[in-house]
Image (cartoon, rainbow, N blue to C red; front, side):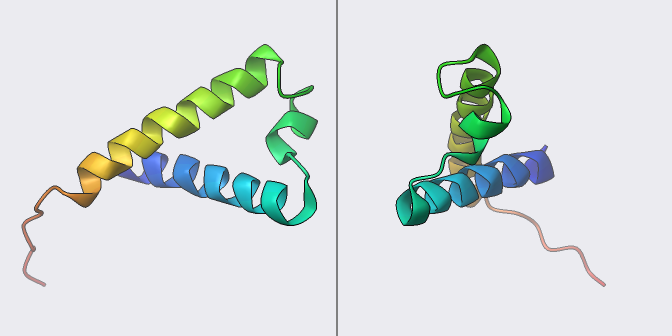
Length: 66
C-alpha cells in the first residue's frame, strides 16, 4: 500500500510541476480534460494517497536486521 501511495504522490508532484513550469496538466490531457470523471478520480486518488503518505511519514517503523 505504501508503494502505491508513493506512486500516486509522485504522479501528483510531477503533474503539479508540469502545471507550474509549463501550464500543462498531463492528467487532464490524458483523460479528457480536468472536469472529466476519470481525471477527477485520478485527482481524488492523488489527494487520498497524499493524506495516507502523511500518516506513513509520521509512523515509526521497526528496522529489520540485515
